[in-house]
Length: 180
Image 1 (cartoon, rainbow, N blue to C red):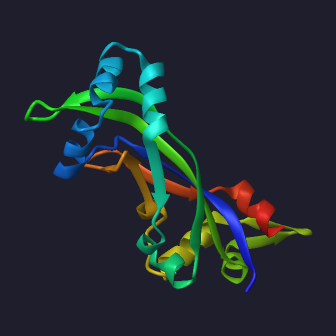
Image 2 (image 1 turned 45 degrees about the vertical axis):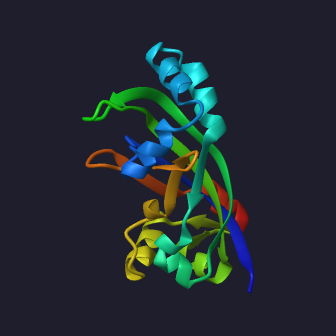
């Protein structure tokens, strides 16, 4: 079976360490105090240097049943970064390092036969059709790719809590290059 690699780009806007154990993990980081101080002092550059060295992301194929059913895999993660750090205090007084955005690019690999369903031929080239892709996702019981994205600061998961945006989309250029 022929497969293709393509990129999907995700971002988390307004992410928060939702679970109590994630908050505990953050407060126990050996660089926690330095990070909070950098952010509170307005030293964004140093704060982001520290965070971006310790930030990771993953694309969890199992959370996108249509991809899992068709044998898609995540083969690499690139460009993981955070931006616009700030501190927020919990009701218990714990200071949490938060970020307006956390972003990552995920390299997925899947069957060309399936991916061809999302492409339109224009002349001698194939173009990605986002509407067709979204219809395919709906037909296969999936709302979108955002549920596949996971973001972690040294093991502490950041996710949405009542507000914000978690988004992920196919990188049109990467899938067209791979397909053509």
